[in-house]
Length: 75
Image 1 (cartoon, rainbow, N blue to C red):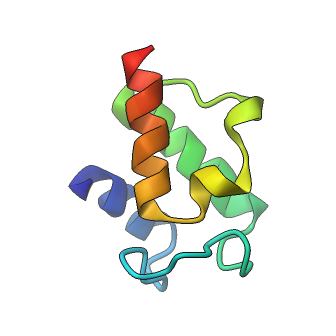
Image 2 (tube, one colour):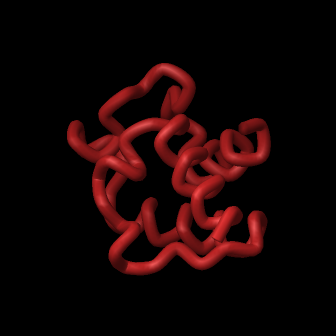
């Protein structure tokens, strides 16, 4: 979780990722942020986030992002 938070804060230091629960739904993160985050996650966790994984539910919270990463690492 710490590595995820570190990556998120490197992309958007102005966002409270621990407490924000609607990062996508409220427009806190835009498409450029998501592209950066996906690229960083792919490299840091040796995973490949595919287009079908780019659903708002997977990126609305840091917990949802961790679940996605865990799922992809288990595959």
